Image (cartoon, helix red, strand yellow):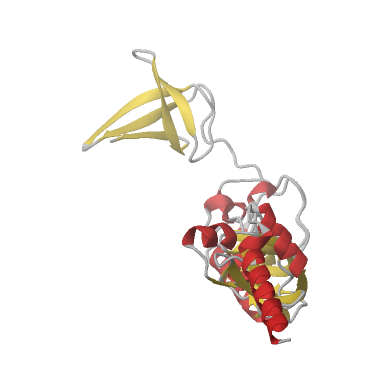
Length: 324
């Protein structure tokens, strides 16, 4: 009887030694594992025994599919791991799988407070509005209290080169992880901008000459942050017989498109040209070959030699050319 048992034990040992060679490596996975990455790589969730460096290099990058969303879980079957190892070129007698028939993979997560995103957006908008207004307010309407993302370093970015203007608008903000956009939000904001400007005291009809007494200079809410649209305090437009191009109601802001700036020099006018080259200053009489408003460059001609050049309009009697 003892002989029969010995023979049986020997036979079993021989079978094991044949089916599982000493060179077979072992893959060990816990029943539940956690990852940070977007995909489930075998090398990130498993440990290996009796494995060569070359074998481990082949196994580490085996892809078991997309990871679950942050804070969620996903099930991986042992059969899938076995199949992927075989696809990588390993025979079934070259490895041992030491884990349950089904494992749980959880994606590690963390949360961003909505206030942090609001602060980021306000800081970016502040830098734009601070240099283009006298006063402003920003209201950010992000309804979520917290945003769940993978447990990794992240950065925030305003997307698109969008012009920032007063009023209600949505601004796209991205959460970037590992240099890639992970999630995008379109965040509603309400921006109010205030500037000092000339405001009509009463109704002023089209064609009326601009008079300082018809306006008050004060802080008002405006619909644009573009400085060039507004008349600056102390402007000389009230002394130039300029007429309104269309009517203004009481409370309307005087803007530069409300009137037509007159031409100071007309075609054929003889004016003085001041030419400055380095430390040398010359003056001569020239003939205007274009009409021009103050600050514009026009073509003028030296009548003595017909030489033409461009000069800046300074006044009805003077143009200027400066050369380094």
